[in-house]
Amino acid sequence: MGRIILATNRTSIHGQWSSRWAFILAATGSAVGLGNIWKFPYITGENGGGAFVLLYLFCVALIGIPVMMAEVLIGRYGRQSPINTMRSLSKEMGRSPAWSLLGWMGVLAGFIILSYYSVIAGWGIAYIFRTASGTFDGATADGVTSIFGALVGDPEKLLAWHTLFIVMTTIVVARGVKGGLEKAVKILMPGLFLLLVVLLGYSISTPGFSKGVSFLFSVDFSKITSAGVLTAMGHAFFTLSLGMGAIMVYGSYLPQNASIAKTSIIISLMDTVVALLAGLVIFPIVFSNGLEPGSGPGLIFQTLPIAFGQMPGGALFGTLFFILLVFAAWTSAISLIEPAVAYLVENKGYSRVYAAVSVSIAIWFLGIATVLSFSTWAEFKPMLDKTLFDLFDGLTANIMLPLGGLLISIYVGWVMHNKAVEEELALSASSYKLWLFIIRYISPPAIILVFLHAFEII
Ligand code: TRP
Image (cartoon, rainbow, N blue to C red):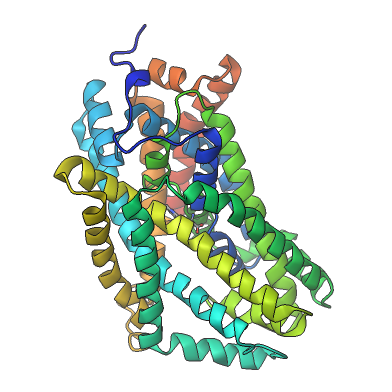
């Protein structure tokens, strides 16, 4: 029919997921990670709780899910790395090949994110050993805080764990993301979920439980700033792995007959449940121990060990918890470099191993800046009174990812041929109309409004 080249006949040179479920598991593995368990609680704490959570949920539903569908759709239609997909789709549709810049921005965002993500995952590795060796038995809030301070104040240790995590990530990416990923996620995600439920049991038993719940869910808009609104939107992108091509490249391995809408909704729901569960575990512990909800990136490392030190079987549960946290971070990290690796394999003729190693070395170097920003360079605040770690995180999560999402929405809503989009999504007429309306008239203006508001233009 109207299609110029039959995308159905295209295949990815990197292979394909074995089924729709394999894609759902891999994408959920990408989405669920430090963003849910480490970042969501600490930024919620910094932004005053309920109102922030509500805005974040709103952004997931209204921007996140539609943009995820758009991103998967582009990936599956193009069947190449994001850079090449954007270039060849645009050419095919008679549009500017400059759209490939969207792919390049994604590669850059992935580099920067992984450079600090790996350092934080390294904290998780360090905590596996601390918890296993009983360091937290009978711990108090003060003790736990000083243990955390000692870790982040020791750049050599952080560098060692950062190195280990990057090596772990490189190994998986070098072998191809499809291999063990499916099996790993199948076991790990339910495991992580179960442990969070066990921890929730502990949290419910603490005196601060109701205070924690009301902090998370009672909405008071006077507590939110325009920077907070930007952070909530940025986090919706970050937690769903959107806006940089990770989900696009995973979509390029998706079998043709799988429903893009259903898979996107399932992934987003699972991701959201894990984040809310993490919040329900953390905040009761915060309030029961007189801790500060806005204490920053160390929040889970200063709260959960108290629970592990006090609950029966805490050393065991704690060790398992940090192991699963690191695994969750691992399945996320691989999606952060897959777009760059796929590109190098396609265009430079590199082997996957060579491509993965070269990309990882560059990211490892950049990670040193984050390592130092918690100690030697803690006072080095080149812009906006923020450390390099905060700048990397803010630049990527709050600016580059939403900008990527904005461009993806415009591309799918206005640039791609409508017919191609409709065929690829294969929705009922009314669902398609609703989605198209959102991706054209709701998501882009919403992203632009939040930007303008945050930069104090309106
Ligand atoms: N979503 C992951 C998390 O919440 C992080 C992540 C993986 C990511 N891939 C991404 C974030 C791509 C942005 C873009 O931990």
